[in-house]
Length: 351
Image 1 (cartoon, rainbow, N blue to C red):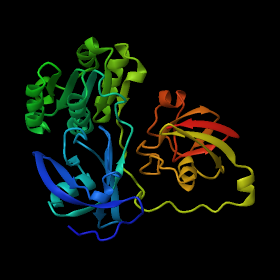
Image 2 (tube, helix red, strand yellow):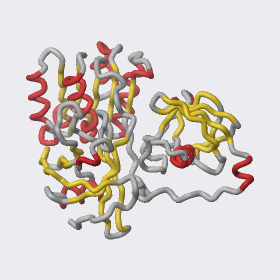
Image 3 (tube, rainbow, N blue to C red):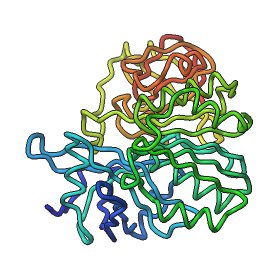
Image 4 (cartoon, rainbow, N blue to C red):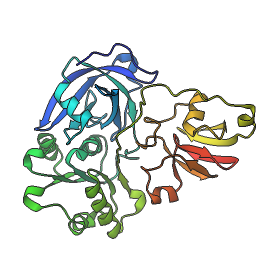
């Protein structure tokens, strides 16, 4: 592996690989050492992800988002877990090449697939490598919270199960709080909506989190919807392969006097503080917040990771790309800060 000497942008950090753990026949965990001066920058929440810069013979590099499988409350070092996928350039390259002592360029933790309160009761669904952010939430809830955790974990067969030993150990450590149901396609077939609904039925008041292949996620969504789960209690993680380069700094946009004169005004609530900004219509909300010196949550700037999702409570925007949001998200006022441009003159937005 080629060692990186200088980050490609102001936000990324060069991290040393502390260890590579074989989790299953086709999955590896990459454990990172965090430099002392980057510890605040790499503080993370359960369920978040890291974006890695991976060398490419064709394009120079590709950016890939991998969920953190570690818990900030239980694990000394952060780790991402990566499973080989058919024709998956990034995942296969990492599994084949990365070893302890290597240096990888990484963006700070990001993502909204995180519980608001670890004391809640949780109903968790994972399939294949979708277990990765789910197990981070599971370990954090057990270690830091007080509620119960039920996990439905689907895989092709027994050899495909990631974190099998870790889950067994946790079930032994928390016998009254953790139940794990393993579902193996080789024995039970693909879980149906009715089967998932039957499993979920006793847990209607729990917070549900899911991650996995699209057909699995669709089935879980239908099962929870048919079972009367409140939509606000249902959370899903969706990743798309990033086409651009989030490691380079965003280019400055040249504004004319007309751009400035016609700018909208936006009130942004971020981390409990309200900021009033001028929002030129050719700029995105992320651009405007960065220019204003705010530590806005974002990763890809392409509308493909959902890290910059926020709630529009007053006003109207247009979005260049909002594929990661479904119709219900948009109906509830969710927008992507990196894709949003103002239509109204006055807006209010909350992160």
